[in-house]
Length: 167
Image (cartoon, rainbow, N blue to C red; front, side, top):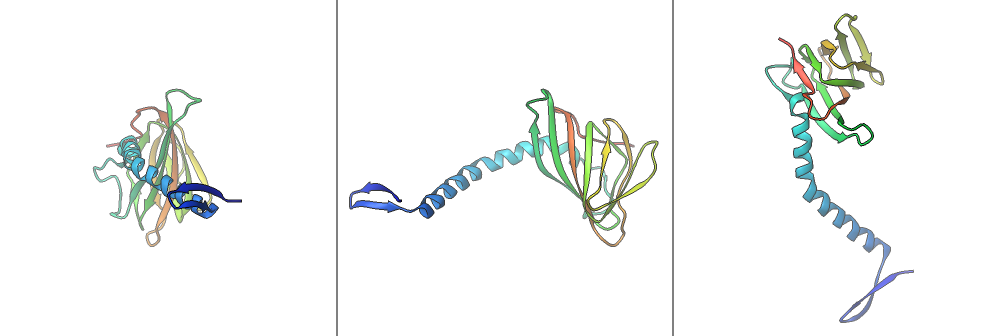
């Protein structure tokens, strides 16, 4: 069954494929208009993570925002998700986070040490947790020849500085 619409030339059938294409184009237009402001908002929330002062050990090390969302069932809290990529030998210097962090290793191996704890190595598919305010003494690629990456999920107060580097 096809829908139809009137034109000055008569009735023209609208096929489901045409509807899907038009809907897809409309969605792409809306997303294209909203994306710059959405990415600006995400960047503003995540900017403290990307603070410099030589926090990393390799020019290949990056922190890439994935998303940031207010938690409607926990007023005043926000979840922020980032991808942390370490080049060979890369690391982040000692720091603290302004909230809880769960990290999931997606590539390579990550060495991690929280203040008072042992140095641990986590492989692809493993995760670790950092309680709010914990001192993260070691956060590094365990390899000097292969890259590594993790996905970090922060739960923190709205507007909190997510990462503070220690001197």
